[in-house]
Image (cartoon, rainbow, N blue to C red):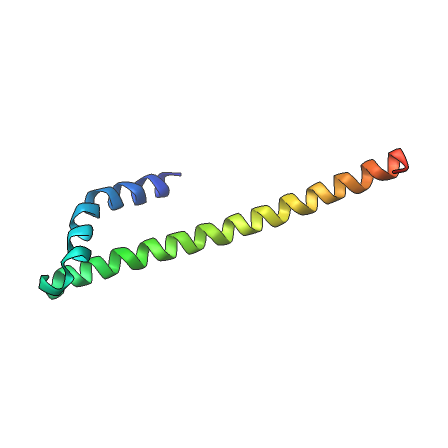
Length: 78
């Protein structure tokens, strides 16, 4: 959880700067472009990892539910 808080704080600190770079990228320095690209890549990877974890969680929930449903149907003859 601490990692998520640190990640969110990092994003909040740089959000305005990054948004400014994105809006006016043609007039920004290479250093600013690299900063924006790094943040976008971090955000992309974080989002991708979160989606993968959520997908595994959903799969696990579905399997658990199906097992419980199967047992319930077996007990109630439905």
